[in-house]
Length: 447
Image 1 (tube, rainbow, N blue to C red):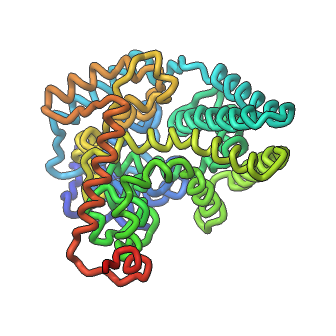
Image 2 (image 1 turned 135 degrees about the horizontal axis):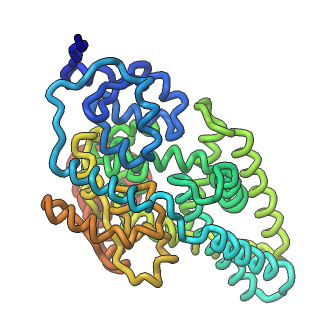
């Protein structure tokens, strides 16, 4: 006689969503991923954020078909009572299965090897210009070329964090360390930790680190309530300093973006020297040390401090283009307060994301992220296929009356500045009292 199934309610499942007690539902079966969270390649944070609920759509998006066979060892023996699947999720899973049958997740045709050669060429020309020319103009252009090489290395770091861009996992890791840590000075481990959290909690003001830039930027007046960042595990205080800085954020946005990589340096160091578990910490730190050896040495080869400063500013400012690109896809889109929800995962991804309209010959410039909606729905999909699958995603969104927002690069910049300006004006007129700050009082004293 077949054993009857054991069921738990959604309310009972929600009791298992804290560190040391993590249960999730995948296709109605309940899995205990508490121990696995310590070894999970994507880190513990995605599991913690989706614990206590159905995570089927997120699992489908982030894992290849081979991953399903490993789920059984985490099965608790329970099933989710009254489990149902929305029409949106059904169509999303069908589309993911269709892409898998077409082999799109395995066909990586964007030429990582060629891109690595281009990066090496840009880097070599930059170094040659510094060492073999006495012209200040050549030194300026060399700094700009170095910035462009950092942008392209950033795309490789991004792609290799989502899927294997090289012929083997070993070479994939080598590419990550070389282009991220050694060339750009940014920890690929930190990037994956941060970026996975962003994808899972897209545009959650409390859980998405890519929207947590207080006290410098606030994309929504909801941040004025001093929300808690569950990623950084701290309160994002909207005090008088934050109010002052946010009040002018639509003017400071582009200047800050020119030097945004300084924040990435700081975040990399904080991550690598933290108490948290960091995979291959030694490799990561060694790669960072390589960067902080060659870059200062290269800058020191310039003839005077004026040209050294010019070189650094040029390289950082050019790379700022990429930082702007990251912001355009999300700053002007819908935001929400609270944890991510597995039950409407597809809808949250489309609501919080903006595609950039461009010609195919400009794909190199955007690194595939112009199809940000497609990328968020299918993060394992190589960028060379994003334009191909875009019509299918648009059709699915149209069928279910879901947002599919697009804008030109110029319009996306305008929308971002308008979003920042709107929040800035609200910060200025906010009547809620904030702790007094001498800087704010001095700047705003009249008479």
